Figure 1 (spheres, one colour):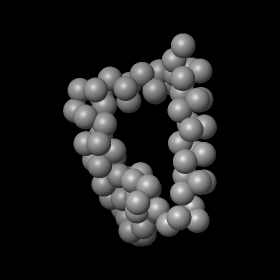
Figure 2: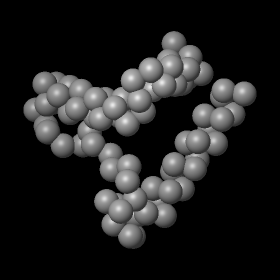
Figure 3: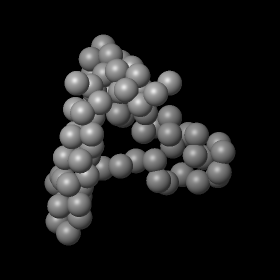
Figure 4: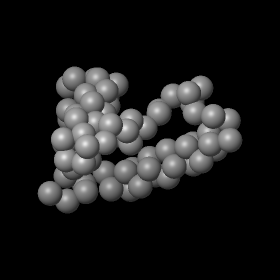
Length: 77
C-alpha cells in the first residue's frame, strides 16, 4: 500500500469512527505492540493537545503538525 492509499484508509476510518477515537485506539494498540515485541511500555503516546506539551516544545510540535498537513494535502490532491 502506498502513502496516498494509507492516508485515504485512515481518512475513511477516521470519518467513520471519529479521529479522536482512532488516535486513542491506535495509541493503545501501539503501546501493546511495543510491550509485546520489546518489553517497553513507553514511546507510543504522542501528546496532541498543546497545553500538555511544554512551552519549549510547542513550536516544534506546531511546525511538525503544519509540515504533516502540507505533505498530506499534496498527496490527496
